[in-house]
Image 1 (tube, helix red, strand yellow):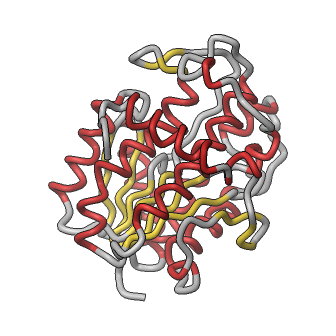
Image 2 (spheres, helix red, strand yellow):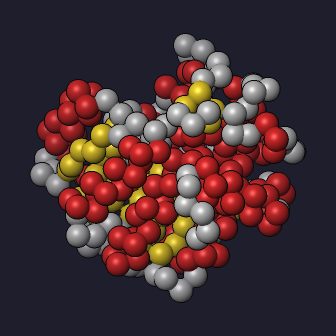
Image 3 (cartoon, rainbow, N blue to C red):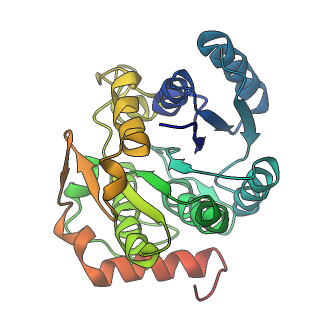
Length: 274
């Protein structure tokens, strides 16, 4: 495949870092994203040395802050004439309730609203670059959610760390399916995936010091496959789990749930109708 320009959010650690490394080894131009500039520069230097690539760039943004998400999109648009792939990889697991700007619970802000907003902000660039792909990282944890209290969002005053995480991933899948329908005929596709149970900072936040998952490279294989493989380019609005395309939960497939997450995203990011 010809060189692709690929933005990987959350690529200074864990699966995102491994994905960026794998894509750089394949000869693609990779746009790294992290929250901490010092750490980001260290990872950039590490990946340049490891891969021999001179096609890596670093962008800094706190995805819990919507204005920084918008700034990230503007910086990417200024720095690159095209964007072939957007991998919304960044995510958090918060054992205790924390609040992002605007009174939004941190898990919901980072795991759902940030990719929702960043995707919408970058869609014009993706469409100009088509055929292009959006790859959203979800989780098998979404299957544990049978229903959720819509009145409890976005603040999640009645808080449980696992529930907040799982609900955010229902939102990612519902958004991806709804986005896929919107993108029909644009030359851009949107799909989502469960990368596996992987030993990451996020898993350790949930399970304690020893998470017990597989290596980040295993999750990176899944992300890179959906971003690059020709077969994945034929799918739109799909969910990938256990090395195959499969149906997500009934809740994520519910058109009413999809519309609720979509409208909630528009409302909480101030985008109005779209």
